[in-house]
Length: 180
Image (cartoon, rainbow, N blue to C red; front, side, top):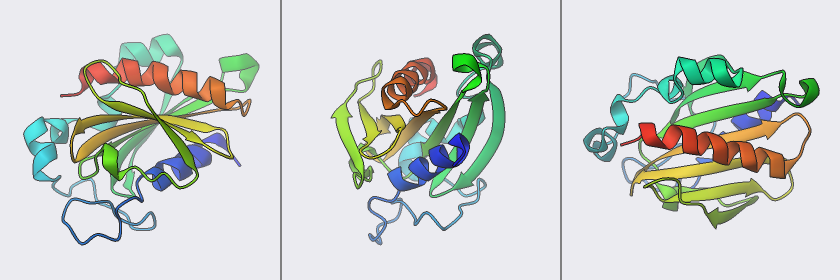
């Protein structure tokens, strides 16, 4: 399975929590696409998160410095998303980074099925590290408000979850100063 597909699968799984609720602003099922033109929830609008485009979370000078290529913006699973690849890392094994802005899901809405969570504050924000319990994908979720967050996920070509967690944390620290 290619690393981009694995990261997108993890991102979809992280967003499934709370999907059975009929309360506006909760997550949607992974097989439902959400238009990027949809208005975000009030909490995302009032926090300033709604104005942020996911592919702008890492600026072009950092992309160049880190040898990253954007895989472009996408939407779905209740998130506005962007991904980046580095194919030269670790003797060509590479890695994939994904960032998802979840305007209607907070830290309490993380799907824990198949994942181990631990506290991982990033800058001035609450955060959680999300490790696959039977895989090699790791992520860091940054809480922006009680009902909004940004998920950063990493997958390495070497299938080393510790290396993926190091990368996810590195990119969370890079992205966090750009968040409200």
